[in-house]
Length: 240
Image (tube, rainbow, N blue to C red; front, side):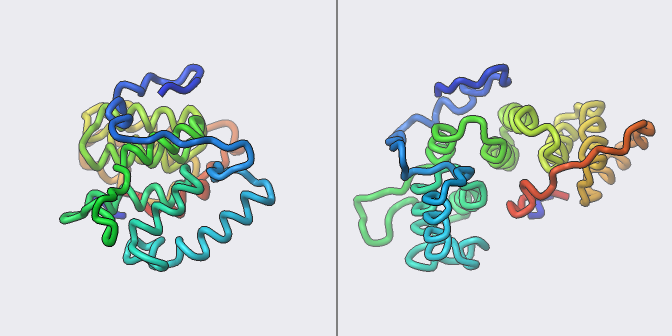
């Protein structure tokens, strides 16, 4: 259960077809050399200051928790952050979650003729500014996974892993997906990788035990296998 383009992509697994609908009614970003918009991973002084200001006013604890807005509506604050930092992984994840809530409307609460972009549009814009951001691909994968678009989710998980091979959360969630898809050998493989990288949740291991396929990994010769759980840990999108 839940707990919680056209770009140069080198040897990425093909994924554009899965998101062809993202271009529908979605105005692309106008990229300015000196921003905004900025990449979330732009560490220039200007970008860091804009991030501080944007998060201070529009990504407070209530917004970060997906409860309510701070300077306006919840979607309005998230939209502001994603306009300035389209690949902000935490804001992107919350926006994807909020838009799936029962009764959600993209209509602006005051400007009745204005509609906020779709989740797919926010993903497209994130990829436009940062096509090789593993965090974006992971958020997309989890969103597609929740929507039971399993093959598309698998593609996005694999893209995230190709970009950041030691991302434990991506391996873990891919293992959960592969378990659902009855690709049990690969589910076990990614479970082993996730746990070797220090992933803490036991859910995937328990699922594979229930199906009678879990086995402990063979002992590695090298112990220098440090993972990256911190990269995605604040997304709060883990499954168990």
